[in-house]
Image 1 (cartoon, one colour):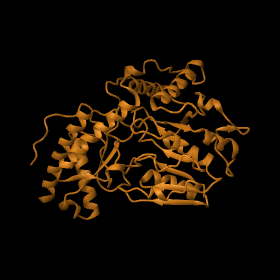
Image 2 (spheres, one colour; image 1 turned 60 degrees about the vertical axis):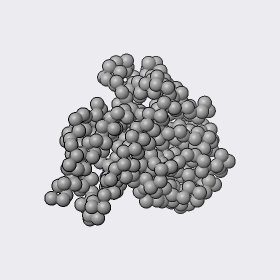
Image 3 (cartoon, one colour; image 1 turned 180 degrees about the vertical axis):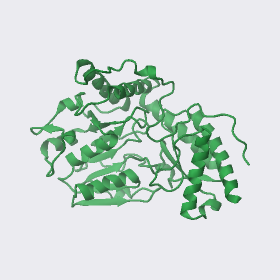
Length: 387
C-alpha cells in the first residue's frame, strides 16, 4: 500500500468554481472597498470603471469591444446575450458538457427558436467544428467546465462569418488565449479563473454584436435585467460602470485585487503560463499512473483549467456504473477528510471521476502534493474494494 504523504498542499482548494484565491490573499485586500456607499456614487462608479478598464488591460480585449458587469454570474451574461441577440438568423448550438446542454435547452425549449441546429458530442469529445455553419449565429462553451474539453483554438471560426459567435468563456478567460477577432460575445464570471467572489458576470460585445442589438428587437419580452438598449441605441453607461442592478462593492473590490495581482505577475501571458504549468503537473503524473487518465480523449482539446480525470484501472472500470461512481466519490472523500484537497469530485452530470482546478491562482507545488494524496487514496480504496 502507498505510504501516507507527509505534506499537505498549502492551499487545498481545487474547486472549479468558486476557485482558489490568489496566492497571498487575505481579507486585508478588501480594505478599500466602499462599503455602505451607493454604487452610483462617484466612488462606486469609479471602482466599477476600474474593474472594466483592468479587465480590458489584463484580458487584452480590443479597444472597440464593450465590457459590462452584469447580474447573475456567467449564467446571467449568457442569458442576456441569448435573449437579446438570437432570432434573426438560424442558430448552431454546440454542446459537449452540462453547461452547453443548458444553453441548448434555453434555445430550444425556452426561446423556442425553430431554426436551431444542435451539434452534440459525448463527454470527453467535441463536436465536428468543421460542420458549423457560420451563416448562422453560433453559441458554444470555449472550455467545458464539467468535461475538461475545450476548443483547441479559434482557427475553426472564419473572420468573414455572417452570423454572430457567442462564447461562454467562463473557465477559459485569463487561462487560455481567446481569439478576439473571431468572437462577437464573450462571457465569464470572475469567481472562476481569478478566484473572485461570486454573483457577478462579465459580458463583452464586439462592434458586430452592438450593431445587432441596435438593429434588432426580439419578438419576446425582455426582463429589465436583460435590456441593453433604449430607443434603438446601446445604453453606453452599462459598459462604463453604471450597472443594471446593485452590485456588491465587496466583490468588485475583490475582483480588482485579483486583476491587479494578475497584472503584477506579468499579465495574461503569465496567467496562462501558470495554468499550463499546473495542468502539466497532472499530465506528467497521469502519464505514469496505472489508474488515472484524462476524460478528454485528445490532448489538443484537453483543458488546462477544469482538468477532468477518470479511473482507468480495469478492476474498477469492470464494475457496474453505480459502483464506479461510488469508488470515485470514495477517492474524493478520502482526500478531503485529510484536508489535502477540497471539491475535487466530478460534476454531478459528468461521468464518474475527479475534477481538479488548475487555473492561475493555484500553485504547481500544491498540485504536485495533491497527486501524492490521490495515489494514497486510490491505494486505500482499491484495498477496500479487494477486501
